[in-house]
Length: 297
Ligand SMILES: C[S@@+](CC[C@H](N)C(=O)[O-])C[C@H]1O[C@@H](n2cnc3c(N)ncnc32)[C@H](O)[C@@H]1O
Image (cartoon, rainbow, N blue to C red; front, side):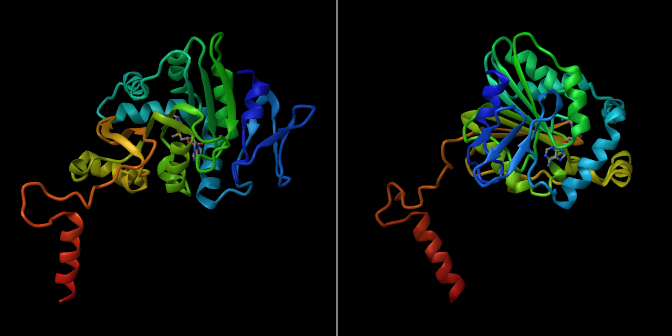
C-alpha cells in the first residue's frame, strides 16, 4: 500500500467517519471539521483527544523526555529480572502473533521500535507494518532505525484508546509495555480488538509480578522501588469475543503477556439446553431461577 493510500484509509479516531486528504497531502479532515496533520517524515498526528487525559498526557511527557536513554534503561530492567534474555523473549512474544509474509500488522505503543524490527522481518516480503505511539520523540527514533525494501512501513502518532482505523483492518496486533497506565484501558482493549480481523491474533503485555512471587525478598524490593510491578493482569478488560486466550509470565515472571484470537462473536452458554437422561426439566436457567427463589425466601 502506498503512503497516500494508507493516509486515505484512515478514519476519524473519535467517530470513525472517513477522512479526506488535502490536495497538498498535509492534512486529513473529517466531515465534522476536525483536522489531523501529516508531520515531517510522513508521520501522521492521529492523536485523540487533542488534550490528552491526565495519565496519558503524563506518559507522553515522560517518554518524550526519556527517549534517548529508553533503550539502555529498558534492557537493564530485563537483565535485573532473573537475567532475562531480552532478544529471545521479544522473539517469543512476536512469535505468538503467528505472522506470515504479506500480513498487515499494527503495533500500538511501538516506542523506539525494538519489537517493530521483528514484526517487519516476519511480514517480509510484501507485508505492511503500521507503527504507532503516543510520544512523538519515541516514534521519531523508531523512524530513524526502521527501514525495509520489501515491507510498507507507516508511522502514526495515536492514542491506543482511539485508533484511526476501520473495523477488521489488521491481520494481527501487538502491544508491549504501556497499557497498564493508559487512561482508558478498557476502551483500548475494545479498540485493539475492533481493528483486527476475525481470526487474527492480539498479543498484549506489561508489568505484573506473578502473585506467587510478591513476598519473596528481591521481588518485594522491586515492588517497592517501582509500583508499576504491582499492577494486576487486566483480565476484566479483555473483550467478550476474545477466543483461545492464553496468559504467559515472562522476564523473571515480572511481566505478563496475553494472546487471543479475535472471534466473530462472543461465546455463549446454552442455558436452556435440557440435561440428557433425566425425566424432569433441568437446565442452567431452571437452576438459576431456583437459586433466585432460595435467596428470596
Ligand atoms: C515501556 S514503553 C514500550 C515501548 C516498546 N513497546 C518496547 O517494548 O520497547 C511504553 C510505550 O507506550 C507508549 N504509550 C503510553 N501510553 C500510550 C497510549 N495511551 N497510547 C499509545 N501508546 C502509549 C509510550 O509512549 C511508550 O513509547
